[in-house]
Length: 113
Image 1 (cartoon, rainbow, N blue to C red):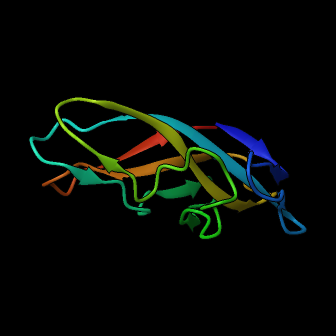
Image 2 (tube, one colour):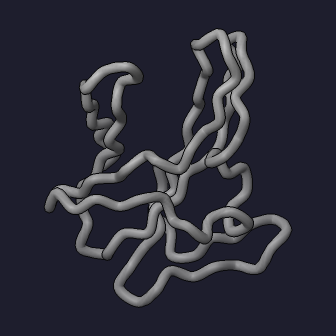
């Protein structure tokens, strides 16, 4: 995880965070452990220490290299690496990713900061 003011992709123009905000870039390894292909959907929610919820930054496609959303993850057990981007207010000092366990109502918070 890394906080940034500017996203600088290799093949596009830089994108600067709005006044009073920052980008949080989460780099992750994802492995499909099912027997069928899956598509990484942009549904991972970030929750800050004030319990505010943030969806992935909707302009991240093209703004960051190796973006994970909408990527096909093929079986069997092939690891993919990439990034999710969130735009948070500067007063968000602690945050976690909220992840639901597939096929259950179990919610896990992965603390990032």
